[in-house]
Each structure stands twice: as C-alpha cells, then as structure tokens.
Length: 355
Image 1 (cartoon, rainbow, N blue to C red):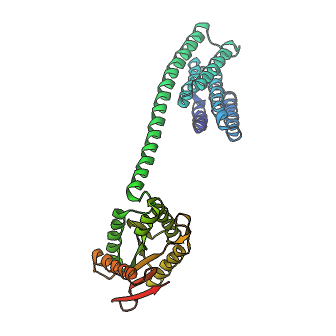
Image 2 (cartoon, helix red, strand yellow; image 1 turned 30 degrees about the vertical axis):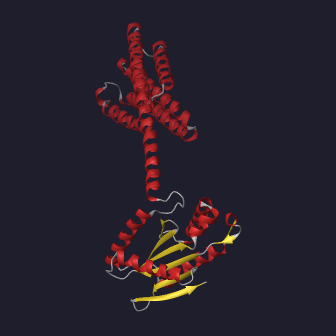
Image 3 (cartoon, rainbow, N blue to C red; image 1 turned 180 degrees about the vertical axis):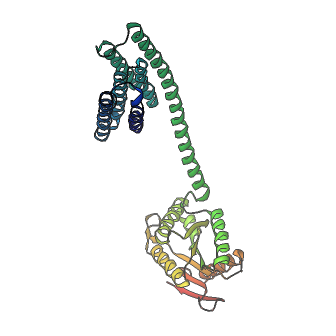
C-alpha cells in the first residue's frame, strides 16, 4: 500500500504538471498551489509513513498506513476544485478490508468520516450541505459493504487455516505411517521388507556405477535359550539394546535392519572390506562387553557374517554367501566374524576372526 502511495504521488505530480497550461492560472501560482503544496504535503505523509512502518510494531503498522491513506485523500480533495475528489476518502475504507479485521475497518471509516466533516466545515473548501451529506451517506454504504466483505474474508481465512492445519496433520500422520511401515516397532530399525527394497536398489546402483557394496548379517548367540530361561521380556530388552548399539556405530548412509527374530542385517555402500570388518568388530566387542540385569548380569554375544558384492551375481546369491558366512561363524564357536571374501582376488574366500 505504501508503494501505491509513492506511485500516486508521482502520477499526481505528472498530471498536475501536464495540466498547467490548461488551468488558466498564472504558472507561478499554479505551480505553488496545485503542484508544490500538495506534492510537498504528500511527500511528508509518505516519508512519515515509511518511518512509522520501520519503527512501529507489526500491529500498529497497519493503522499507520490507514492514517496515511486518509491524509493523502484529504489533501487531494482539499487542493482540488473538484468536489468529487472527496471520494478519495473511500480508499482507506476499501483498503482496510484487505486486513479482514473489523476493528481496522471501523478505524478507517471513522478516519474518513472525520476527514469529510473537517472538509465540510473548512471555510476554504466550498461544498454544499446536501453534497456533503451525500458524500457521507456514500461513505457509510461503502463501509457497510466493506464490513460484509471483511466477514466473508475472515470466514475464508478461517477455512484456509483449518484446511492447512488438517493438511499438516495429514502429512504428519502419513510420515508416521510410512515410518511404521518401514521400521520394526521393537528395535526401531528398518524391517525385513524395507531391507530387501534397499538391497535391490543398491545392487542395481552397483551394477551401473561399480560402487563397492558389503553386507553383514548379525545373529545373537543362544537367543532361544535366553527366551526359554529368562522370558520374552528379557529377550525383547536385549533386542532393543543390541539395536541401540548398532545404531550408534553405523554411518548415516548404512542401512541397518532387523531381518527377523534375533537376526540383523546391515548394508554398507561405498566401503572396503577392511572398513566393514572394523565396523562389525566394534559392534561385536560393544555387545559382548555389555551386562544385562535381566540375565542376572550375564553377557550376550554376536556371530557375524560378511560378504562383498560381486558384479552380476545378483542379490539372492549375494545374500546366500553372506548367510553361509554367518552360518560358519555360528558353527565354529560363535562370538566371531567370518568374511566370505578376502578383499584382494575377488573370489570367495573364508576368513574367520574370533574373540
């Protein structure tokens, strides 16, 4: 709205300047009365409004703009010899409808009506009683129409706010549902289905880019005995704790999932075999160093199988080789890591590392 005041100031100056030769007044008198005085007054109002906007809080800024529009309209109506210019005082009323606030509309209406009365009672502004009364009635009618528009605008805004709130709630619920679908409720890791989706995606990415890809399968040793001796509550507690330890060690780009039961799977893109082994060793050592009150202070260990993806072998063969390495770790003493690749010749090779 203030930008509109600046534009109105420039246009008014240009029109009055162009009308100078048609006015019939001496150029000096016309320049002072019709150009200099109103332009100076309008300039002071706009500059004052800009200053007020910069200094006042957001709530008061709107009232400052309404006052600025009212003063500008009053000045143009007072300077002009055309009485219909007093209708410029309708602009603040119409502009206040933009805020959709009845109190601001009422303020604008009072300001415009007060300015109209001042013009009527001013000895320098020659306007008849009936003409002034007609202008006042028009202002009241416009104020009523603006009030109705404001009510409609507020109703539309409330509907828009409600729709936005419901949309945000829907997005939040959608995100939550997506998370629930993709993650395991107990461990907060990815679930079996999501793991295979990522596995397929990363295998395709490897075939196109050659990016290294490793898979680790981790299994809690003697977990069935834990459930039988200490109950499923103790078993669930161990699963949650092991999952927490896994999450603290894996990178952001790694995919850690609960594959099923007491078995976990971790996809490690863009890593070497030695980096994968070092990460699994940290997890194995951390898990083995924990004691559990629900197990009467006993410890829990992991058996881990590791494999590197070979070009064009397919995700099923890749998973099968890793599972075979895990099976070897379980059957060769547990609490150890078995690598299905040595990382040098590219052919399957078994390396066993125990605690």
